[in-house]
Amino acid sequence: MPGANPTDFELLEVVDAQDRVIGTALRGEIHRRRLCHRAVHIFVFNPSGDVYVQRRSAVKDRHALKLDSSAAGHVDPGESYYDAAVRELREELSIEGPIEKVMWIAACPETDNEHVMLFKTVTEAEPVPNPEEIQWGGFIPLHRLTKMMENTPDDFVPAFLLLWRGHLRNSASNR
Image 1 (cartoon, helix red, strand yellow):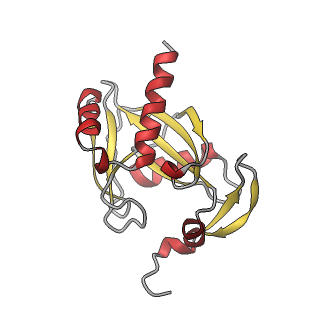
Image 2 (tube, one colour):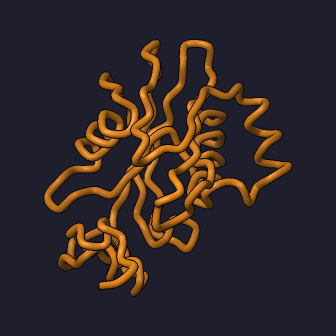
C-alpha cells in the first residue's frame, strides 16, 4: 500500500461500546473505519509535581507534532490495560516502576474512538524519550501547562486535553 505507515499493519482488537472484544483488524483499517479499540495514557509526575509532556514525532499517523500525555499507545490483542501501560512507559520513556489507575474514558471523537485507561506514576527517574515516538519531552509545572492549554489548545492532542481535565476533576474530588 503506497504511503502506508508501518504501524498500519499492527493487529489490534476491535471492541464495542461497552469495551467488549468483538474481533480484530489492522490498525490502519481501524482508524480508517473509525472502529472502537483500546489505548492507554500515562501521566508521569516528578516529585515536585510537574508533569512530563511529550511532543509527538513528525512520523506519527495521528496528531503528529502535537503535545501529548507522557506516554500512550494501543493495547495489544490479549493484553490488559495495565500491562499495556507498563509496556508503553518502558518503550517510550525507559521508565519502570509502580503505576496507578486514574480513570477510564469511553471511546469518543476526542479519543479517536479509543476506550482509554489513564494511569499515573511519580518518579525520580529521568525519562529517556524514544526518538521514533517522541520529538521532544520535558517536565512542565502545572500552572504553565494550564496557561499553554488556554493559549494554544490546538497544539495539544484532543485526548490529552480530555484526560487532563478528567484527571484534575478526579484529583479535586479525592481531596
